[in-house]
Image (cartoon, rainbow, N blue to C red; front, side):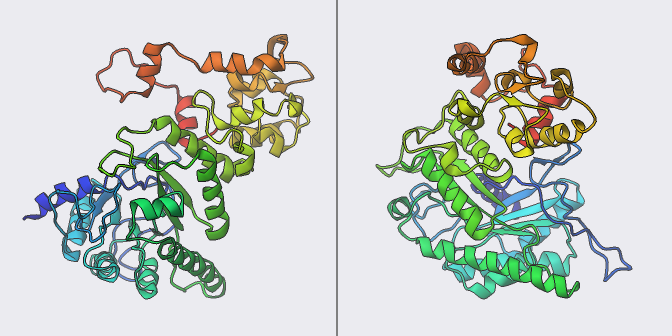
Length: 441
């Protein structure tokens, strides 16, 4: 089997791994005068079908080292019981493909994962050797995100962390019970142990760098994990509580959510795809946890453990806490402004900065990027609502649901795959594009 045939199989097998993130790294390429010539850069402008600050979309070669796997995870297309073509790259093939694609300006970095070939240590050695070749023999200084294999030797994880920009361990399932049901070859401890090692290594490396600037960097772009949503019965509340716990305990850079794709035949697995809106709501909640100061038990409760598909989590929270609103925009502190629907991190900072020079009105807020369509129910300027409207707290939810609701035809169009040739499609405004990039709610 030649390299092109392998590439077709292993790029297709890698499509279920989520890796869309800005690089988070600041290492640039070095010139010939600096410690030998090198190519590529891992600057924090972005990577892997993500958007940089200036709107560029950055590309990443996303492949598996192998889709041969000794495990039989029921939700995975590469499980050993599944009848699919199998192949494995050599370390040299991975390195040469990456360099050749980079030289042709197809990619700016590499995302490398793998099925478990023979055993975890063998697979990790294959990944480490591919990354070593790229760094040492080919002089590649670009971004590399590599997945570690649960159960691998800690020395191999440390070795990989010193060469890659970001490393990650997939937690797979939101609960230990589901992991035992759908991935009996894996254990919670085998996943959390390397996650703890990576977290500790990053903290230790920060201390070393503070003392010695020449100390080698360990996973400078941090580490992340991924869990599959919709294959198991956990509620949204349980998922975001787990997410919150992972951020606090392991200081993860990101937790990714991947909506389950029906590729298994286990009787406990659903035979239809979960709504992608659920994945979207989880990402919105994740944003609230990381940047808006929310706690998981504020976003959802035991009485309402799942998200409302029509309203985003921030709007739902605001509707459920009428005693805190309306907020006077000229007096509210930064943390309270962040909790107002339609006010994002950047617009809240602009409000706090601008009101030192004078009182703000709704025209000012619109220029600052506040989404008045949502914020008008929760904000007042000088004690007055937008256009002098009278807001009845009982009717806020009804009004917001009416704004969010669409006709069946529009709703279907909104959730369908966009077509490049749809003449009815209206391009988004620049403001809408920036909010989709930053995730502001």
